[in-house]
Amino acid sequence: PSKGVININSTKEISELRLYDLSGKLVNSYKNESKLDLKYLNEGLYFLEFKYLDGNKTIDKLIINTY
Image (cartoon, rainbow, N blue to C red; front, top):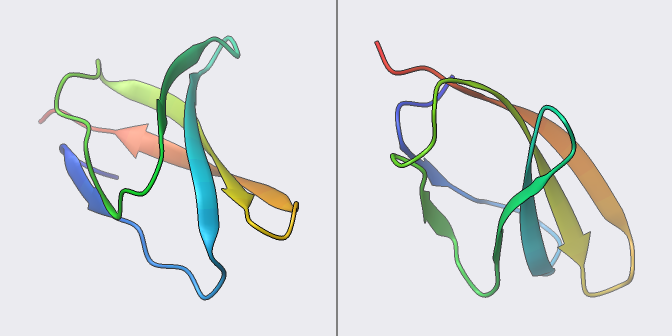
């Protein structure tokens, strides 16, 4: 769980990060950032999509916890 700021570490080069809410709506996208300030988000479950320079992508769950 995260309360707001997360650091992104990857062995592969990331071209873009996309943050989606539980309904699949795009909340934000990030390029060339290794630290994300997510304090503006409401508590809940989100999905973080990693797009890599080699064309591959992965999706991870992200839980925002405000307490």
